[in-house]
Image (tube, rainbow, N blue to C red; front, side, top):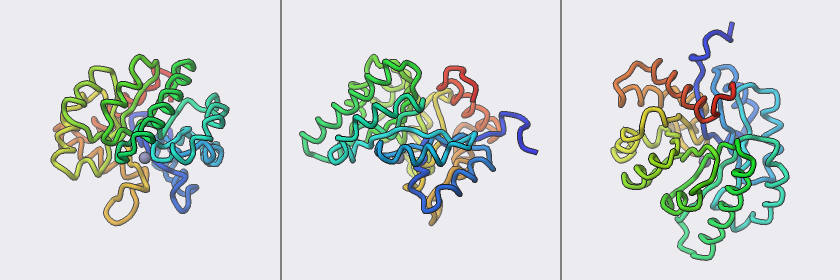
Length: 252
Ligand SMILES: [Zn+2]
């Protein structure tokens, strides 16, 4: 029997379910292993497909996204974004990516993020999963004062930027790749335990030689258990509680 104690569920707060060769198998896995999975998307035009995949699932939550690296080519989909917005509580992947040195593209990214954030603010109950590569300061700046729950996914900024994000109430979703470097582990160790969620960023992050799938969060729970010197079951329960905090008490 499944069901049982809610503490036995896991969390994958950022997974690109639609980008696996067989997304339905990923949804099945999330159900079988009881992994609450935020299925982020990279463009509004693929949201419906992901929402359909998740429609029969208790654990997989479709998220509406516009990836910063696609803003330049897909900004015309913003109307679609607005139309789909009432259909889900989850927004992502959105954010800024300053890998590009093109100031015009960076500025477009900021405008799009500001627009999406203002819609989220008006809706009042949205949860954002955010990309902030080389752009943490501007990401925090754009999101200042926005009423929404914010999760910084795969944080790679500085300690100073991390401290600012903590002070501003952000949550953090951490993955296996972060645990592979001393810098990543240092950042995770500095995050308050009540702000940490697990994620895979599958299929982009690997688990050994294969793409990470939602059940890979079990490995990250074990890493956190080592880092926090807590039993894995406590870490798992803590992460699930943190997801409940993100949802402000709405039952999972
Ligand atoms: Zn991602």
